[in-house]
Image (cartoon, rainbow, N blue to C red; front, side):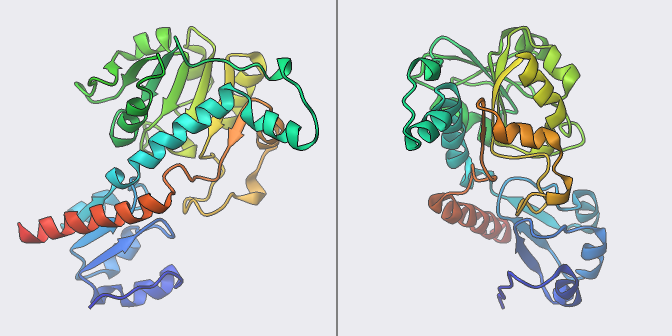
Length: 290
């Protein structure tokens, strides 16, 4: 038996979850301990996407519940999107587009900054970071990466220490999961450790960035511009911004010429929607066969 339900509340699902051996989720509500205690027969959870932060992984492991995710399904989309946002930022395409639509023709003021010759630093070198590095080939950049795991570098990026990363990076792109270690990682202290002013790209998780500190660094010139597909102020379901919690630094980003913003759509393509599901399906089938 396979049932679909995209609208019921968590409370309603909790009343019937004890009937199911497995469930496939996105991020509409947290799969916390309270929920899992009611899922008496649950053997697996498939997360259609990369992040597992909405699932109580520790308690699931205690219960012997297998967790599957599918970062392979949207890594291509994220890699393309990160490159696109970076080029849009460095070549002032958002501002130039808006100006031309208003009949304003400013060439010198919209003179761009080339990727060629720069050092791109990637934080988190898993599926997403690797896909981004892959797509930078041909731009004439040097790509370095930092990851908490050793031996993650490959032909697309050289792994370096965090100290070397701070010394060399001129463009910084985040590709990390949301964990206690990465939450509020990009803060004032972290930013000031960079030798060069840099562009910041975030297609990972909004809560990895302290927006107030980033805005201050933009005002001082330490951060040359930001491309943010994710925001600190998103709901944990990623479905909307928390309107009552939008501070003045968000208004600054809205008005800033050197900010490109998107509504958490880096991994959100027609193709990734299919691939995400296919990878989850294949992993569950392989698990059952073993």
